[in-house]
Length: 324
Figure (cartoon, rainbow, N blue to C red):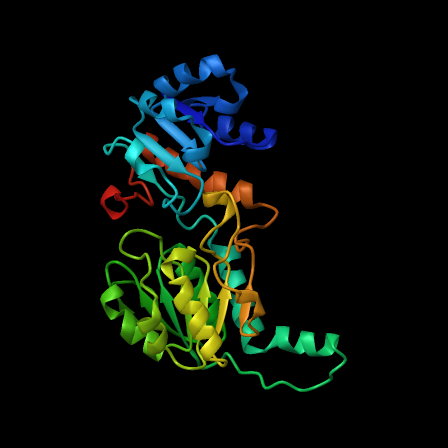
């Protein structure tokens, strides 16, 4: 029997789901239900941890107590917010990959169509009493470069194909069984950027991807390209993007993931006046936020925990070397 500690705030209904799902394999402890004096004992016994943001859920002195932990399963898809220096490197860390793919792909499509059809400028003109036709573009027949061809990227591709969009994909292996016009790795980044009308970023943020979209890469893109980021802000150089948008009025960006956000940094802050630009569409990193988001995330995480318990292949394993 495994000992599982759940360290984030879980609604009562989801607590029952977790306990029922794992009742034959795990003793489940919800850390927030324990008095402070009992937390250390529970953490010391656990060999599985289910967490959303460990940096906020555990005290500094509690990390050394994780001597028995073998699996740290995240409810979040990304792992860039983890305190890797405080974790043993033999712990298996698994991101919740693909858990939120469908709502995030819908969000990408919403941003893409809103920008192509110039919905925001049209709305602003109407609000000012100006009834004026605005030239829009057709999505069908365009090329979409998807950087990060995992669960989210593949979901985006499925929606894009419905509009007859050609898919250029980038992943770590340069291989896929999906129907794409091109598949490559980050070594092919410039080629994909130069040929794409729409570029969608769904990459994880790590030391290999931080800042990979800078001034040179933006200049490589088409003058009327659309850049959508639903991954992490730091993958794009903030100043480079602002300057490119300001000096290239036909270039557009849909930004859902920002550089300084409450979940990772405790506040929202931007270093440039992005919202003064007419060719930017922003959202508050809510591409995955739908009414059933907690159920979706917990369900996917529990499936991975079940794989671990059954000694089956685990999805989304994080390589410490990509972050440390």
